[in-house]
Length: 48
Image (cartoon, rainbow, N blue to C red; front, side, top):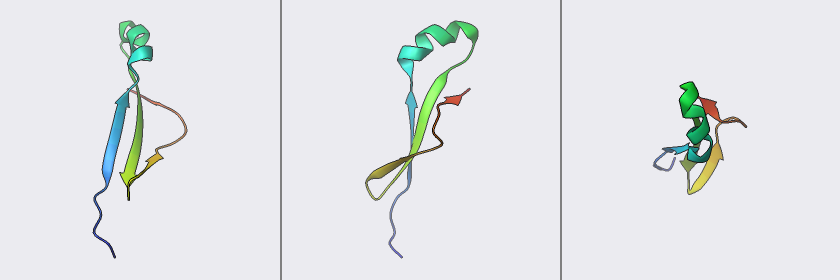
């Protein structure tokens, strides 16, 4: 089995967060990168 790093990418959806920050929430997109390819986690943004 190959020894490859697994990277978690989290993207700030800043153009949406400019409007939602006043509500106290933020919208982010995330994905796991392995073997140079990114796989999105779920089909929708994560609300925090």
